[in-house]
Image (cartoon, rainbow, N blue to C red; front, side):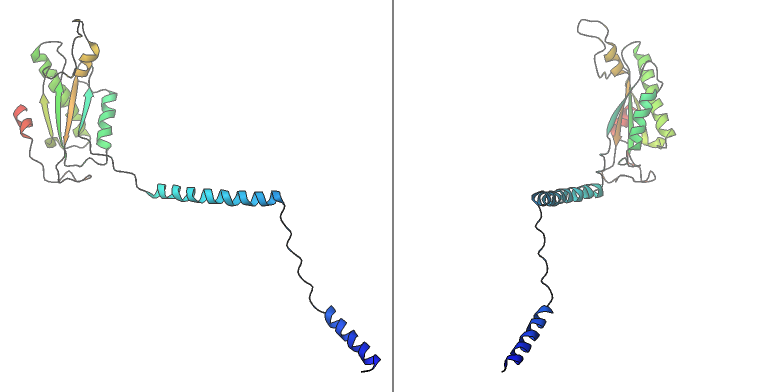
Length: 208
């Protein structure tokens, strides 16, 4: 090969080398501050995601059904009138979603020992009847309600203190109507009031 051919071959080789694509530039190395920020963001995401999932699951869970109420006490001042506190307590009972319509209500009226036994027996019945009337006004069938008058024979607290003086708070606890709610075992919450009635408890019949 002569000298001229060798020079031409070298020129073609150099031109071919110049036509190759340039190598990509290396990715910039993140600074320590940028690397720390990225790590913090990833850590925050790993912490937040389980929390968000747990909260969404908690919201999706249904609230537990409240227990069926079985008893309550309505207090009275002197006389047989139902006050605002008594109405609020009765409304709370009636609003309980677990209370089935087939429930039976036993109302036992009591009094303190201020007055004659006959007068106390009478006012205790009037108190129980006042609660009954409120319940029937709210839709409870009257045949599901039993009224019992106890007078001053079943005090919940002493009417006097140990030194013989009057006990106003004890007397207040005795001016009351005790409510017993009897639910048939087969009844489920929300059963209609038109279901077959349960037999009246023997104790309630004897003292009616």
